[in-house]
Length: 337
Length: 134
Image (cartoon, rainbow over the protein chains, first blue to last red):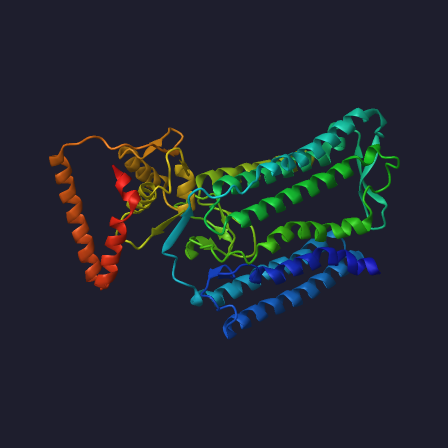
C-alpha cells in the first residue's frame, strides 16, 4: 500500500519542488518577463506568485492521487496521462502568470557590455573530469566483452516494484550493449550542449559563474547517467543475473538525486545576477523559455525562467543541431524498437 | 576592461567599439602582444553582427594598432610614430581641433557645466598615454 503512494511521489515530488522554485530562481525576470526591481515583492507580484504556487499544490496532489490510482491496477495506458497532468497543468499555469506579468515589463535594454579578456569558464584542471562518462561507459563495454562467454542466453532487463523480472533480452550485441549504447547516445547529446554553452553563449559580466555552474551540473548528470547505465548493463555478468542490479528504493530516490545534482551548483550562483544584463528582446521568447532570434549570434542564451541555458532556435547552426538531435532520437527508437 | 555599446547612440556600433578600444590602446591598458577577443566571441558577447566587430578591428588594424589574423583573432601591435612633415601634422591637427570644438559645442548644448568640460579637457591633456598615439 505504501508503494502505491511512494512510487508516484518519486515523480511528482521533485517536479513540484522544481515548479515551486522556478519563478523565484532568477532576479530581473519574473515568469520569463523582464520586470523592474521590486515588482516581485509588490502586491501584484505576490498575488501572481501565490496563484501560481496554489496551482502547483493542487496539481501535485491531483497528479499523485491519479498516478496512485493508475498504479493500483488501471494499467500503463492510464498512467501516462495521469503523470502528464501535473507538468502540463504547470505549463498552463506559467502561461497564465506570464500573461499577467506582461503589462509590467521593462523597456528593452539599451546598453550592452562585454568584458575584454574574461576569465576562462572551464579551468584546465577540470578537463580530465569530462572524460569520466566516456571512461565509465567504455570500461563497462570492455568488461562485458571480456566476460561475453559467461552471459546467459536470456537475461532480465526490467523489474517490477516487487523486484521480480518482467522484461527479458536475448544474448545479442543489441541485447547486451543496448543500455550502454543509449547511455553513449545521451552523453554525446550532453557533450554537444556543453560545447554550445562554452563556445556559443555570452561571457558578459555576471555570466561566467553561471556558465561554470551549468557546466558543472551537466558534468554531474552525465557522470551519474553513465554510472547508472554501466551498473544496469553489467547485470548479466553479475553473480545473480536474475536479481535487479538496483534496489527499488534506490531507483525511486534516483530522480530526486539527479535533480539535486543538477540544482546544487546553480543554487549557489542564483543570486549572482547583479551584474548580468539580459539583452534578449522579450518578443523573441515564446512561452517564456523558447528563444528564437536570427539576429543574435549567440547559440545559447540564459534561460528566462529558472536556471541554465536555452538554445537560440533562430540561429542556423542551432537549427541544424536540433535536426541532428531529432535524427539521433529517431535512429535510437528505430534501432531499439 | 569593459566595452559598452549604447544602442540608442547616434554613433554607429562599429565606431563605438573602435573608439573604446583605441582609448584602451592609447592609455596603455592594452599592450603590444595582448590578444583581443575573437570577432565571433565579441559579436556574441555584444549580441551584434560579426561584421560590425570585424569592421572595428579592420579600422584599428589600418591605423597600425592591431594585427588581425585570418582566424579573426586580433593582437595588439607595437606602434611607432612615422616621421612626418610639419605641414602634414598641422593639417591633421586642424581637423582634430575642429572635431574637438564641435564636441565641446555639443557638450554645451546638452547643458553640461563649463567647469566639467574644462576639467575633462585638462585631464585629457595631462594623460601621458595620449602622447603615445604617434
